Image (cartoon, rainbow, N blue to C red; front, side, top):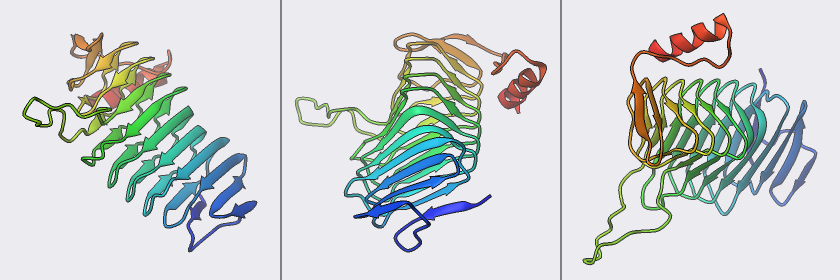
Length: 243
């Protein structure tokens, strides 16, 4: 597999380069990179994709997209020294990633599928939280992952009430329903299922079904979910849930 490296020190062949803007074709994929400067992008053998990466007055960021990525992705940076890793065989359908903080990490492991209009946001300027989506997670459409509160909240002694690190982790083989919001500081254990329209404010153990606003546990125990009604998919789901 050939890895394509985009940097000011090692620009690959592209169809247009104007004022640090790059646009290129890799097989059936179109990649657009705005204001590369000291940032670096590595992309390995994507499938049919449209990838837009915008760096807004940001430096020393690094993006790695491993092989067989497919879908439409918009990635916006306005912070510095952030790292984004997208693993093998990942599919994102018209989704966006927005990073305004510094020194953060976003990890999307292998075989993850993410539906339409999903939003992943790392915007806590007071901390450097991480988002990690474990392998074989399945996110439906219009799911939001947030590591921050939009505004500060103070008590009458001017003490900040909503501070603190907000890492957000989905362990392997989680199924997240449509229109769900998962907030900062939450870890969802492997093999879990989150119902449509839920707001997850607290961590949940493995092998849990939860739903509601805020999300509450409906079922917990020995069960597993599969992507398809087939013996192979069933075996894969069972193995991923309990390995």
